[in-house]
Image 1: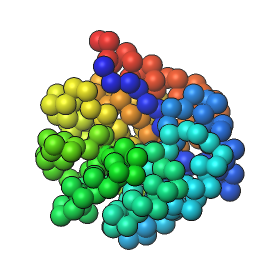
Image 2: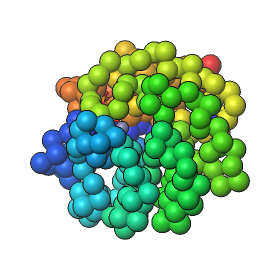
Image 3: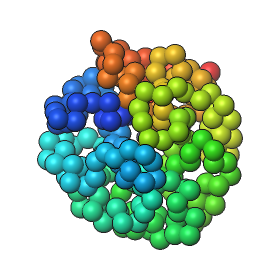
Image 4: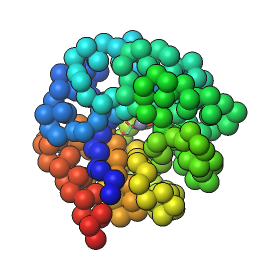
Length: 224
Ligand code: DX5
Ligand code: ZN
């Protein structure tokens, strides 16, 4: 059975107090910290890069789950590896020609390789990366159009999660965008086990409660 991983998206945190926000999330029961790296080109928003990951790494031992919303993910492997990133998830839409090289480099830097799909991308596009002899180790199914926090969950993306879970029973399947108490059951029932949540966690009066509620939903779906 795949372990539930609850990953608050630090995009919704107070970036000016990133270290204490990270510590607060770990205290609230987070398994991973989701770090949204955007280049202002793949998506119309610009966030953080390796220097910020490096700074944060000095303050926490937590698993830093980096989501690369960038046009040239290969350029980020070396700097992020050095900075102390834990997971490196690139988008399949920009890696058609070099995903093998990407996966190999990510692993050689000691990071866990993942691949992500935008809402408009068919899930079949990640199958070759999973069936390869040097496969990716996580698939991130976007449940909003990447770029911003606080958007509405797209339930129609659950077909992708379901198809993946059926084909790959022990794969880490992550969902990202619009997850919270009102949408978690759908994602959990479809088979997602890694849950990214920004606004629903940071906007809650009791983030620990929201994290624990999402974990229970994933656990319940697995035992049913
Ligand atoms: C969106 C990012 C998400 C975002 C999720 O492009 O990839 O990680 O922070 O935020 P919420 O949970 O608020 O939709
Ligand atoms: Zn993300």
